[in-house]
Picture 1 (cartoon, helix red, strand yellow):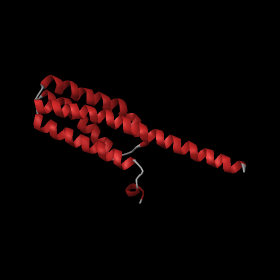
Picture 2 (cartoon, one colour):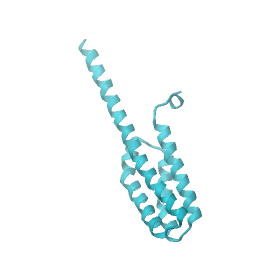
Picture 3 (cartoon, helix red, strand yellow):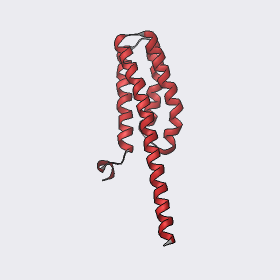
Picture 4 (tube, rainbow, N blue to C red):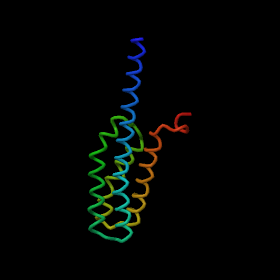
Length: 126
């Protein structure tokens, strides 16, 4: 009976850590998506100051969270997000609004892909 409780305890710990990781992933991606949405709005309005600030803010947010995500997610998409995020401030500085808009849309899609790939759904499991 003692082995049963130990096994049950280990399973509960594994589930708790997994749920915490999914919650953390979800909150990070929501934060990044919020900044990208603001950046899209600023690009649409061609607001140079806001575009510069938001592109730099996204890059800093990504750098802050990148190590956390890479601890439990190894994805090629994370590497691609890193590359695209590094381009945003330069695109904003040179007022390349069409390309900046395209990169922002691509970043949103990549973050959505990372979220969908990590959450346990029937599609991901089978």
